[in-house]
Image (cartoon, rainbow, N blue to C red; front, side, top):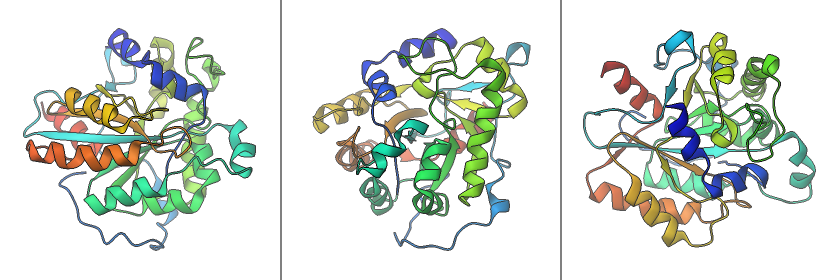
Length: 287
């Protein structure tokens, strides 16, 4: 599984995103939502990453890795969105660069599409109101994408790397940032920055109790300017139980909202039902 994921992670667009500007803003069966902004904030106790299904540790007790649901019941698919931001990008945000994408979140709400947002702790600090708004919406769940999008291996698109002894602390620092921002509906899932990991990283995260969630469909939305091409790539790749990786940042993934508006009705016409990652993980546990 590791070698398969590393091949997937070498997609040029994802590598470019890992090095460039990055991020997002603002299940079970698809849910309706009135799309209102300003819902009451979730209580801090709701932030604790407990409750949703996780996978058992892998061989030698390594952190489990989930990519897609094997033999799912029905034609289900999970759209996931990486809300990336590094510690060094605060000045760029202050100067007007947009690492969020409220219109994308609004589109998901209008289309009633459940989704999982993999958020860095630094993004939650930069956009606490939007992070809280996403986590407070029953359509969405918030997962961990590290604190500052540093790599968990020594060779990952030139990203600065987290020392082995600090990997667990980095993940826990992101969860702490979610608590400070009062983000609700946080799930115990983690996605490696750049998709890069090895046995050392999986071993380091075992005490954190997370399930690693990667993907089997690369959308190619990072820095894309042709929404139709990205749409075709997603539609060609989706299978029952797929996890699609996308991004929600106006600066680095400007076509994603248009892609979602095209992909969702096309997949529904094929009989697909959109779910959050937690439902696919639950299905994998029962398989």
